Image (cartoon, rainbow, N blue to C red; front, side):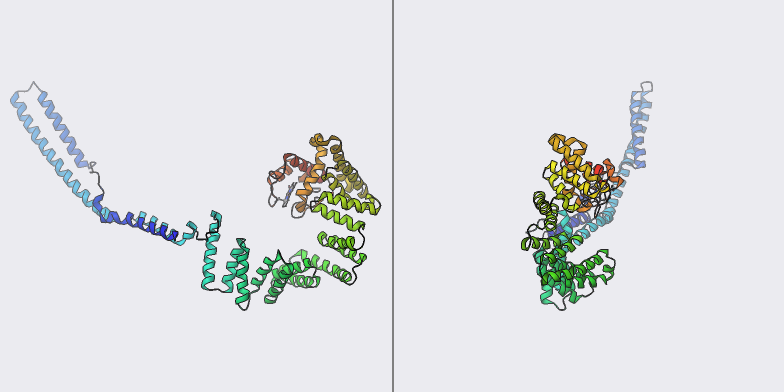
Length: 506
Ligand code: HEC
């Protein structure tokens, strides 16, 4: 509605701008053209004659009769000149008025072109100017484009509720995070149309993922039925079935995915298939006999495949159903707690594991390192120093160098307390905590890299200026930490990366 008014107004303005000069040309006054050369000459002649007459009147040396004759001659000449001037001015005025009329009859092409272009623009993209959206939406300029797309998609789906149009509309809702409307739209396809395109089922699966994996898997099975070779469907089905522990369907889907061009190019899928192959008989054994031994074997297989979450599901059953002090199950549960940001719970679990294993030294080195980190993170610096030292002993001098440095810095923290925070070595121990809280998800617990660059043994990670810059301002996919971390935390994590991590071997 508003758009129509604006366009209407623009048309009116254009009309007045173009038409009024055409209808009333005399409206505009023109200045006389006094730069005409003939007129200039005549005026100069007139001035000269008048000057001559004045001079003549001043000449007392001439006889009166002679002066009168000359005076009359000059005056007659001046009269002629003045008449000529009048004539010329009249002639110029007439020409000017003719020219004026001719000019106003010419269409002002430039102005019309500009206005025309403006009107076209306004008519073609009215929603860019004034997006038409429901009153419940808040609009920022970046939304305008989407709002226009949404409007177009809504109209298209109304005019022709085809699968294609409804999918496009649902996708726009999805992009706008209007999930309920997206779901309703996709469901219309499923309920009202036949055949249902796999894409509609797939979208419903994605929407179901967050609340109900079983339902999501159901939609994905339907999507696969509609489009058996769709790589994305097969991959998602594999992941969802795997997460639900439905290993048979997961293996089947991953194998089908690996047979697609996308799947063949994906290096992770083979590892998934191998893992499932290894885990399936173990899971079957657990189902047949959920003994401690079977549960531990299943947990270990998941743990070694870097699936700690799934592993701990099994370990947890060991702890609740069989042996509440099983050391490996306890320690690994503690490690997962540490990774989940619960260092005190981690300390509790790993200490109990150490008690039942017969000492911290009897635990796996990884668990010992996590315990040291968890001590440090909870401010138990003495315990941390002792445990880092123990880890260094367990893994040998080469792998243990970084832990030695950490033990050193933890000791400085322990003796210096808060005042020791500026000391370079003690900073590293704090830095390691900052690192595990903020950086490991991308750079790995040991700086081995992942989504982020490898930092362990990386000479660029020993360059303080480079590291500080990356941490403060971010880099590529890496976020900036300037605002998220306190200045001392930045100093600490930079010290840890440059002095410990970059010097360590993997
Ligand atoms: C979201 C993932 C992510 C997080 C979190 C992250 N990084 Fe990075 N980091 C990256 C990526 C990706 C790069 C490579 C950037 C590039 O060069 O394009 C990188 C690069 C770096 C570099 C530069 C390495 C080089 O070769 O110059 C350093 C140093 C670094 N990160 C340290 C850290 C520290 C310290 C933290 C925690 C405070 C951290 N990163 C958190 C992803 C991350």
